[in-house]
Length: 467
Image 1 (tube, helix red, strand yellow):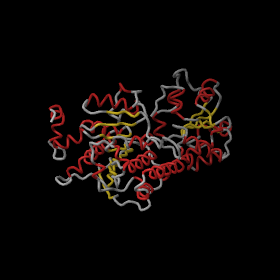
Image 2: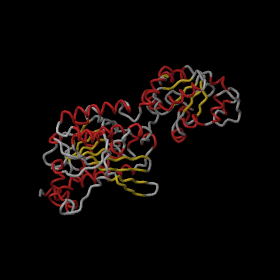
Image 3: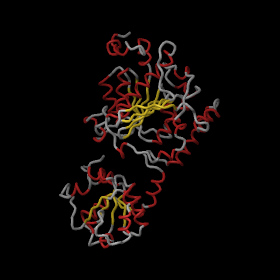
């Protein structure tokens, strides 16, 4: 072996699962990592450390809020595309591997071309349920093994999906790998497990529910291990036990330090993507046409959006557009014209306590300061607004001087509300729902602040923390 290879990978080569032939195989393989965030960070570092070449796909740029968990990035790469940050880090870690950057989000239009181009294995390290369907479908058609990971809060999960039946489309993969030609086993796919995309629309993301930094890091490490096992499994199947976690889902509960796995090997009889492959087994053109129709159905079902906003939320946003104002308009009325009004923040208490308009602008900051005689600020989480009988009574006009929510408005009551209620949240979604609800309760002068605090930070005050 090349002395440089021996020196760098010697501890790994000594492992029975690797040895000399295995290291040669790993160095000739290419992994596509989709998502360079918390999951992708550790997966990328350990795949590159093991000698596997990389393609990294992500359209986001590095932000300060990424760094507590996305350890492949650092302070010096803030503002760079995450893929470029990854390339810098991997070049410093292991210049013997190649890194190809794809500075775009994977989507319906580009998924198949990205996944089928010189790739031996795919790691789904995204946090977007629609993207997971797209990756699953493209990997199935291209016959590429998929290692899927997810994490939120203190919990994580991982699954290995092995497509069935080698197809001609997969011949574009790297000649160094014989995985596609050798594969005889398969597993259920993501659609087998989650047949109804709309059922996942309520799943919280890290951006909304938070995440403990080491959790996605650990899941990413497990994804890297499974990727190496999948690459090695066929070559060593008769000489050493090396079984990828195919047909199982691994769950991690960080609160109890508990790992649980359960069987998911049985395919769903009417799975759209598995049925598609069976029905068009010999005709690649028909497969691609059927896949296109499947993607169109996905768009109709959960919306043509690159984020986790579901179609119902998009409909609400469109409905209240006429009673929405921009963040620049709110800046004008609140800080320049100083028009008396109520500012209703419907985020959760933990988000409000972390950062709020009230905490930022009770004294002058960037020439912005609230006139406390002109604005009445309240934090009422959306769930509480929609469910609390006390709030509903207050909204219906009852004089409730003991109200804990609007107690500060005792004497002014509806008179103050008639001056205008401006509803705020993080991104403008929860506030839109609140505006619809308040209007149904009879309030007339209620307005949504479009885009919420994210838009405020991006367009008005870049010192306002994004999270």
